[in-house]
Image (cartoon, rainbow, N blue to C red; front, top):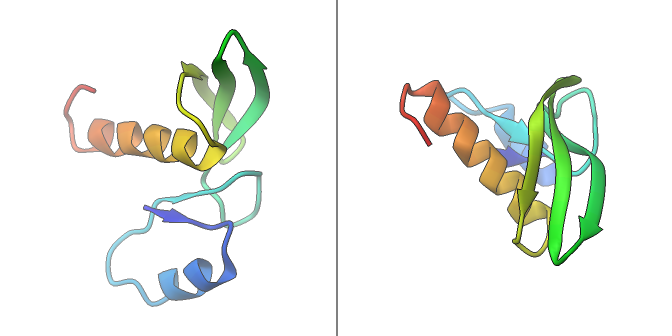
Length: 86
């Protein structure tokens, strides 16, 4: 799982010997997961999670910082990919 907001991380991922799940703060050609339609209200953050342009769902989290919200979503995706239930 790698944050593609940083050029150095994107460069390192090119040499990875295992699949890289990418995420970032905005859409991009190399970014797999990103937030959309972000709203802040009632002490929470609400946003849609996009997977290469496709909306996976809407989340509301009481976690500060967009990077932390994205990491949370990517962690959930990783769990689902290995067949577990979050």
